[in-house]
Structure formats: structure tokens, C-alpha cells
Image 1 (cartoon, rainbow, N blue to C red):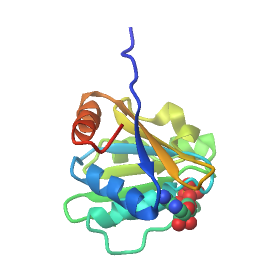
Image 2 (image 1 turned 90 degrees about the horizontal axis):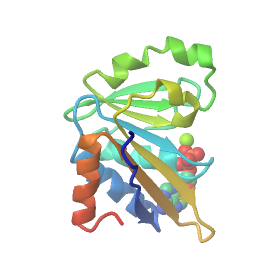
Image 3 (image 1 turned 45 degrees about the vertical axis):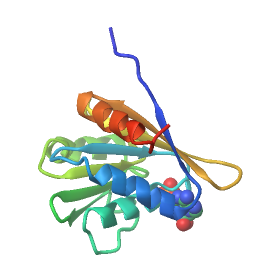
Image 4 (image 1 turned 120 degrees about the vertical axis):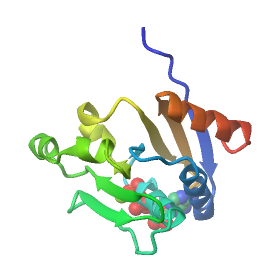
Length: 162
Ligand SMILES: Nc1ncnc2c1ncn2[C@@H]1O[C@H](COP(=O)(O)OP(=O)(O)O)[C@@H](O)[C@H]1O
Ligand SMILES: [Mg+2]
């Protein structure tokens, strides 16, 4: 029997709100943390990644790794692997050696993770971003696995998630 999935929400009315979510999450990271980012083009996946990278001490500008698929950065405490699966084929995805990233020493953030759904680890924080008519963004956070469930429960208790 599979556990029932709970989804939490975070509303972002402006880019600073998106940065604040990245800051909140940066407090929980461990080696092997995996966060997936899905949502339409322009929803704000890369913009979230930029705030998140800043929050973990990366001074370099982080842009969309659509053509490189994976870019690696050194954060203050952990390596950061920024991935974009938008243009990947199944064969290419199989050859990336994703387990080395997912179960390695760093934090993986994967844009368009739905395109490699079969290759994702069972434990992860899934974020889907919806762009609303008023240009605000709603981040839907679904934790898979106990560590991520605890992150979300704590953020909710602290009034950051709904
Ligand atoms: N609250 C917000 N959060 C994130 N991005 C926002 C927000 N409001 C406006 N934007 C803008 O929306 C665009 C999102 O683009 P991007 O992050 O590249 O999308 P994606 O990677 O999902 O295709 C950026 O130009 C960003 O400046
Ligand atoms: Mg992008």
C-alpha cells in the first residue's frame, strides 16, 4: 500500500517571494538532496534555481542548462548540480549516470524532471509551479520520503507553507 501524498503550497507574488522559498529550503539540505522542478515554460523554474543557488552561497550567475543538461557549482557547504531535461532523449538520459549525482555528496535540482520520471530516486521533494492569471506563481510541494515530509511539516508549522 502506498502512502497518501500530501501537497503543500507556497504563493509567490513577486520574485523576492520565490527567493525566500529558496532560502527556506536551503536550511534543510543534505548530501543527496533531490528537488524536482516542473511547470510550463516561463513558470519560474530557472528563476527559483537562481535564488536557491544564491541562498547556498553560489556567487556565479546560474542560467538555464538546457543545452548542457547538467551544470555543477560549488556552494558554501555542498556541491550543487543544476539540471534541465527539456531536450533530453531517453538514451541520453540513461547515459548521464544520474545515480552518481542523486546519491552523491551534492544537491540536485532538476528542471523538467517529468521527462525522466523513471530515473528519479524514490525520495525527493517534487515542486510544480503554476503561473496564475495575475502573474503570481503557486509552488506545489509534494514530499516523497520521510526527510522531505519533515521539511514540509516544519515549514508549514512555521507558517511558510499552506
Ligand atoms: N514570482 C515570480 N517567481 C519567479 N519568476 C517570476 C516571478 N514573477 C515574475 N517572474 C519572471 O518570470 C520568468 C520565469 O522564467 P524562468 O524562470 O526562466 O521560467 P522556466 O525556467 O520555468 O521556463 C522570469 O523572467 C522571472 O523574472
Ligand atoms: Mg528554465
